[in-house]
Image 1 (tube, rainbow, N blue to C red):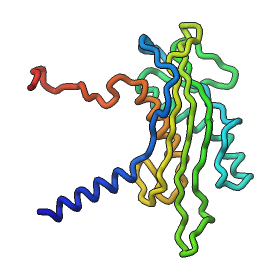
Image 2 (cartoon, rainbow, N blue to C red; image 1 turned 120 degrees about the horizontal axis):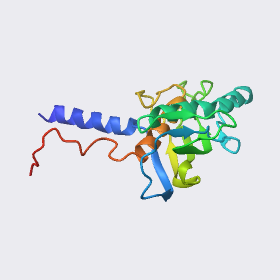
Image 3 (cartoon, rainbow, N blue to C red; image 1 turned 60 degrees about the horizontal axis):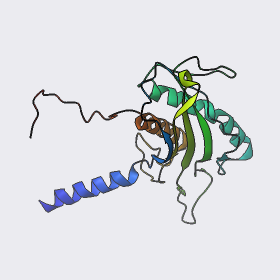
Image 4 (cartoon, rainbow, N blue to C red; image 1 turned 90 degrees about the vertical axis):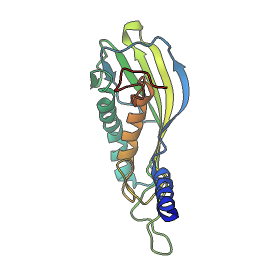
Amino acid sequence: MKTPRIALFSLLALASCASPGTRVTHTQVATIEAGHPKAIYIRPFRIECAEFDRCLADGEKLLRQSLAPTEFAEDLQEQLAKIAPARVLNPGEDAPLGWLVDGEFQEVESGYSPGWWSPKGDTVTRASCVNLHVRIRDVCQKGAIVYEFDVASGTKGSPFGSIYQPGMGYPLPFDFRNAAERIALAITPDPFRYGVRCSPVMRY
C-alpha cells in the first residue's frame, strides 16, 4: 500500500513544481463599488520602456517586441470576454463606455535560446518572466481608476511541458496567456465558482 501512496505524492510534488508562477504581486487601487461593466475595452500595453528578452538576437528581438502588445491584448480580450463583451481598441480610438484596460510591460524575458548548451551537451533551461502593471478605468466615471495592480507571470524552467508551460520550447506565448487569465481571475467574484451548489439544502 505504501508504494502507490509514494507514487501519488511524488506525482503531486512534480505537478506543483511544474505549475506556472503567475500571481498578483501588488495592488495599488481596489475600488469597493466597482460594479459590473457593460463592456470592456483594451488598449495594447506600452512596451517601449520594458526590458525585453535579452536572449533573442537583435533582429528578432525588435520583431518580437513590436508584436508583444498585440499578442497580449488578444489574449486579454479572450479572458475578459468571460466578464463582459471585450474588444481591443485601434490606435487613436477611445472607449465609449464601460471599462478601459491599459498598462505597461515592465519586464519580458523568455530565458530561452536554442543555441545555449551546457558542457554536457544538454539544453540549458532557464526561468522566464513577464511583469506587468495593469490599470482598469471606469469610462462612465470620468476615467476614474477602479483597479490598479501588478502581475508577474513566468515558468520555472521545468523541462516538462503542460497546457500552462512549453517545457523546452519558447515560453512567452504561454506567459502572456497565463498573465491574461490571472488578470481576469483577479477581478472576477468567485472565479472558480466555489459558491455554486447543486443542492438547495444547506449541509452541516
